Every structure is written in structure tokens, then in C-alpha cells.
Length: 144
Image 1 (cartoon, rainbow, N blue to C red):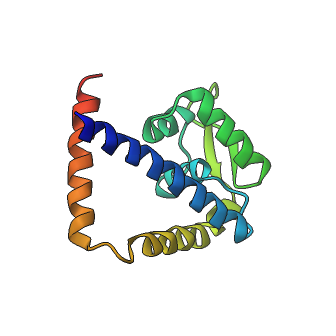
Image 2: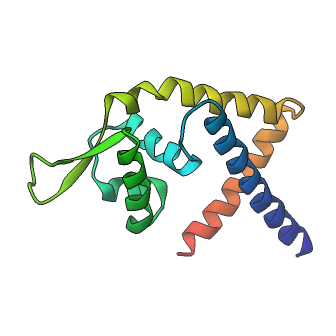
């Protein structure tokens, strides 16, 4: 079982390192966006005008954390909340023009980071790693 413990430790360390590098790359390019905020923007680039509950589900984050991310993105001018036309009691989250405009730049930054990280790793090694992590994810999410 030590191998599993070591795998999980490296996975956690890699995730933190990835987040740190991506955040730094965004900041250096002049975009005050964190990885979590970027992931939220990706949800909206896929489907704009969604409610907060949909965002929470897609990001697998609780409503409180999504609210914090949205508040920051609102302050920075990337998204805004609007009253839902079908249900006046709820709001939808909508990309602003600025939120749509940063898609290309932020995506390019992420893709460059991916290229830098995988430069010396064979595609088959990455596929194998993804396959293994999917198996872990299936086991972990099926036991909820």
C-alpha cells in the first residue's frame, strides 16, 4: 500500500505545482485570474447564461466557494449576474464582453504550460497515467 500513498502524495504535489505555475503565468501575462476562476470561465465559455447551481455541479464545488469565485470575477469585469427571465427569483451568470475576450489569451497560456510540462513525456505515458487516474476517480466517486 505504500505505492498508493506515494502516488497520491505525488498527485497532490503535482496539482499544487500546476496551480501555482498556471496562476503565475496568468499574472505575468497581465490577467488577474486564478486557476479556479479560469475553470469557472471555461464553464461559461462552454455554456453562457447558467445558474450558480449548474456551475457548482460542473466544477464539483460547493455554492459558497462558487459565490466567492463569482464575486471576484464580477469585480474584475469578466462576468455579471442577471435576473433569470423564466424565474424572476433566481439569477443566471453571464459573461461580459471582457469575459469573452480573454478566452483566447487564457487558453493559449494554459496550452503553452501543457506543452512545457509534457515536452519530455511520451504521449503514451500521459495516456497511461490518465487511464490510471480515471480508474481511481471511478472508485472514489462510486463510493459517495
